[in-house]
Length: 445
Image 1 (spheres, helix red, strand yellow):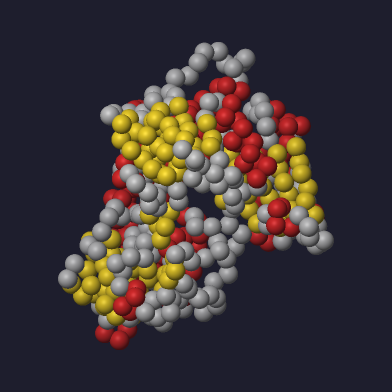
Image 2 (cartoon, rainbow, N blue to C red):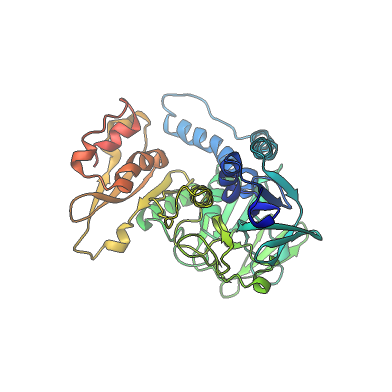
């Protein structure tokens, strides 16, 4: 039985990765667990985020590889957008039921509806009270919408991934993860793409020399970038749309993607009424992921935190809460090194200390590596690949960034060195499979 007569030991608001990766093992330990969700089970990542995006990107990888092998593999590939979206749904449509099955098998009770805090231990779901010893807020993020005239004429990332017919001309507002990745996909599929940037830099948290290379490559492919565009208005013009920006400039387009960012889902949760503190960046928590109300915790992208708001971070947080609630630990959360990747082509991936942050530091050194001499890059006929490594005073790897077609795999192979503070001696103990990208990457450390 739940402690103190509550209906549940732990009640989660939201059914994304910030919940189910922890709720399932917690319930399996015998705790009474409930999950409240008004939308699809699984949240953003399985339904309209990571899984969908990487599926749409898979043909881009193939097209790019064929370009590099054009003198070896004859013939041109054609990009069938409708079939690509059909395949996307073949991959993702079954995920909500699959995750629901995992939750049910573990004994988690699913509560379908909209939840709102009534007090420190009570959530009201469509008029019905649910009580719990502990409550976890895992409501995630949603697409930001520009506060300008005509904003309703724009679409969000979920709309893009549901397009059965790709518009001939697409205008993307924003140059973060979504803007840059979808510009890559849409361009490869044959659309004319314009990216209106909020500032003069794209992907601001990534190593800028690598970002600029990706922009230059996309420009060669026909993508137009307008820096510091100052988008002012959207208007409909027959079957098309007009985007006004800058000092009186405008363009005509078939479709507008508002990729101006994502914001935390903190509204209509009863936070103010109950006293849970939050700000524009999300819900405020201490080092145990506990909010300003002792019995209420938070997990996932809705948090105000320095760590990247990514699926692996949410998984780590909800797994930590599972251990905290079940008595496995009472320690503060200790975040590991969390890698990030943007699925452009080439990809950019990084982990740990950013080279730009230690450029003037006497305690760090930065090593730039041109990977084009690496034999494994020659196998794939890559035309651009670079790796930046950051070392501390003891010459231990504390940061890495790479731009290449396999940057995600390369950074994954370096990740243990960054997380565990390995130096040359420890790295020398690694014997990677050969031939492999990891073995080639090891030669750079």
